[in-house]
Length: 370
Image (cartoon, rainbow, N blue to C red; front, side):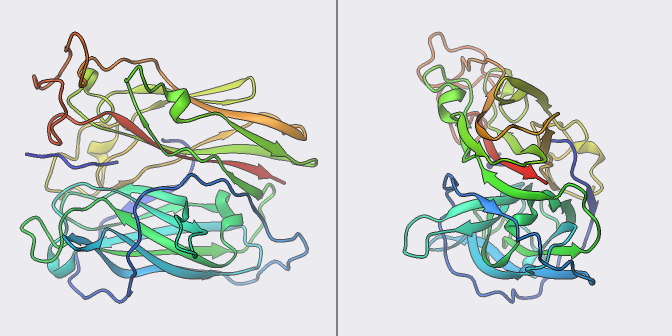
């Protein structure tokens, strides 16, 4: 049976609860949009410090029962919308994501997906995607998840374009389901945040093939030079990484545990990319292979970000942020001599099913705090 593309863990509060599939029609009218990620290079600053603190919470809708699907020429795997965020300075922001089943029939497969804000692209060029959350759909059922996105607060100012993407290949009338209904909102709460994020700097990393000596990680996820202003109180690196591809040596990159590294100048921070709690997922009525551990994700869950807090505030000036992964050569790849290590006894050629190219999806930001 073919396996489709699917979807680090530390900090960020994450709560899961199962909701029933729903068959109501979508209420959001989308426009088609390319699903490919663009490398972001802009800097987003918080509102000016003299903005009055709000007294009441507010919830902003990103999508409301938006139908995401693929039906040949009718391709709505990627859907854009708009949202208007408050200009006041809130202390906490919580993203809530709900997936439901169109006409009671969700996509039968686990699909990698994301919620993002968009910058640029109004003139017809490619928009820059600022990923807020990455998730993998459950096998054939709906659910609800929450994620603390308070660290990304400067992104939520005024009117913004939004995007939901699900790597689905089914739609209305397909034997494997009708796709997904997506509802997403962000709840803002007033209060005190002693070290709020003042600036969000996208690091521009996207996808990286793993295990090909001709494509080392450091060239695909190139080090970034960032400029830090004077007076910064602290800094964090927010990283979301998930591994994909199977049937290779060590069954990478979906089913192999590897240590991933963030470097800030000469400081090194390591994190194993592995979720060993997939079998504990409360969405237990999934209809596929959802229980095995995976590289940074589980079917029917948000991929939890890895947040590195620098031990001291960086000095004003230029700094380098870099990313790396344990050394690895995939000897079960096209052109490998000899061809060895294919865990499912395939040839070294990829077949879009039991043997797919190993790669990592990476999205990262440098966060400067007060």
